[in-house]
Length: 112
Image (cartoon, rainbow, N blue to C red; front, side, top):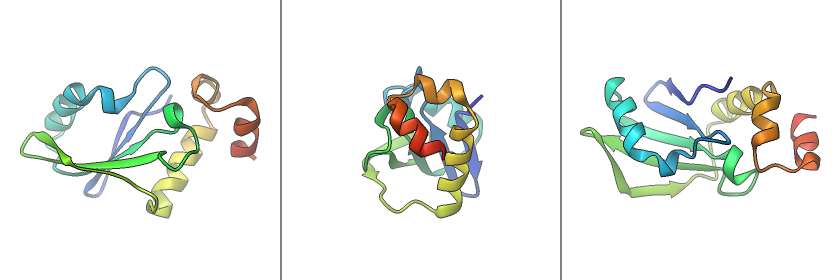
């Protein structure tokens, strides 16, 4: 099972799932991040909903109990360790991959 929110240092990594698109659930995420007392950069991994496209990763600042929507950016250069961890989690969850927007061919390439 993919964990939706992981805190890695001063970054919160939020992973989209086939039934959870974080950019459409910012109010819910705000509550969850606030409960975690988190402030900092939120990195969204949108693999499940955007696939392996250039817009797989995006970010937005979270402080003072809210998202700064003006800070939204697509991320082309993600920390290699974070990307590797995200890839590993996804590859180990067949249900996640099957529910994602990835085609059978893309899943095959991604997992091998």
